[in-house]
Length: 60
Length: 247
Image (cartoon, rainbow over all chains, first blue to last red):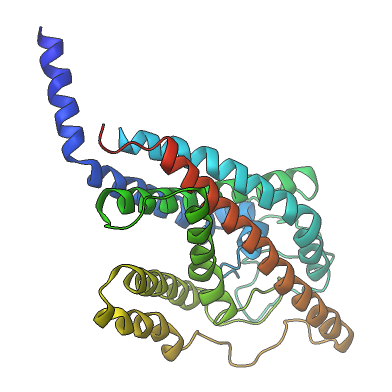
């Protein structure tokens, strides 16, 4: 009984926030792109160095 | 579950397109990077040991930060990074396609229109920032401060994307605004170094690096074209088949 109530609540709130979920997915993409392509730490740079060059990201 | 479907689709699309680009890079682009690195000189005046490129062309980093060993480890990290960038781009692409299907009063995405989105992405992420601004560069090329170039790159990508979106979605009277927006970063101008050229001043090295740069530019352009069209087509398919927003 209680569980059913919770799942109904969840599905309705998720339906409402479809656009919000889409925006969250984009934010995740931006964070990932930053870490792999742009993060200034030497370790991130060295690991992804050749990929950064090949995607024509600003490097060095 | 829009978020989960987008994430799972993006991972699959990113793995396929990133892996393909990684293989293309391994056979076509990385040899150029390795060749360019043999001409790299330690720039003592500027941030010593910031990147640790050796004159020998080996990618050793001595006492500085960790870096993958040349050979299998370096290739592995490169392909891994290509896949990660593929997933990041796929997250953008599939999210925007989902928003399009959710909100726009235009035909829903398919594999074919996805490929067209791929071409638009190629313009946004490669042609505008790299071909019209910061050209693809081999290691050892003189360039302006990294942070300025990264800032300009981000601005250029954002404004080109916004410009294309306006051209596609907005009523006719606003479309000129899209063109102006996309042109703005180029009117500001990409940050350029005080003098163009390479860190290595040996004439033979300059000639070799100039040739390598031309090859590098051509091959990254071809590779990016393949990568983005595949990414767009697969994203279009994923959105059509797997991303259900009205769940």
